[in-house]
Image (cartoon, rainbow, N blue to C red; front, side, top):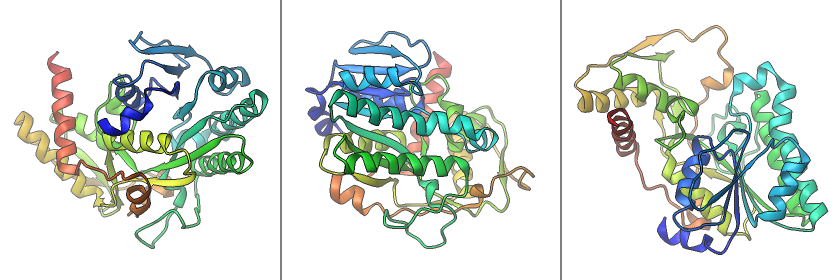
Length: 324
């Protein structure tokens, strides 16, 4: 990671969604090597050395004019992160996912600047594929409003790149887990973070169905490494899987969390089965095994933290926070 980060010191960098789970972890890594970071957020942020803050709404053109005018490298992480929120309000999903990309492209055209854009998409755009491992050549088949809008955003960014307006790449993130400085990191992003927080309280964990559905859990430090690597290699565009290439069933992942939490706290935690809730979105029934060969070959970026080690780190981090 340190060698990769050395390449950012000369760039002015913007991070949208800087107060969020991944955004705050990314900023924490960047400020160690750069003092030219613009944090973009709708909410007031605590001052942080090496950064400036733009409090703005990413669905407005003026926000993107300010970002593009000042930044060479833009990590666009802001927007809706919930399948269920998007299903409940598709219009707002469009506003938070597609409209910002549209304004970004418009700002680049108006200002005549060609920033590097790294966009966080999602591996769920592939839909319910049964052919594994999944590489980037597989045609996406979104089955949710959320994934459809993410795919539209990817392709809008790719079209602008093809037309020479900017230099963009989209990372399709698998299931991200692990601690960050976001105040809501235990509940803001991902089931593994949430069940770890419950296990540390000695609460039993519920797994829906038979727990056999496969997930690829990628530690947040490895995601940050992939984002920065993609940001610095400006001649690469298109899409990229950001995952580990190793999958585990939901029940087995929960059992691992329960075991590691018991080691740390002495509290016995059980994993109990339950029927899927009636309102469950079909995307929850997916399995996913990623092909990460492009991540390794193009960016020399291979995930370093296995699931057991990552869960251990997350547990230690949560305990440290509780003991402060």
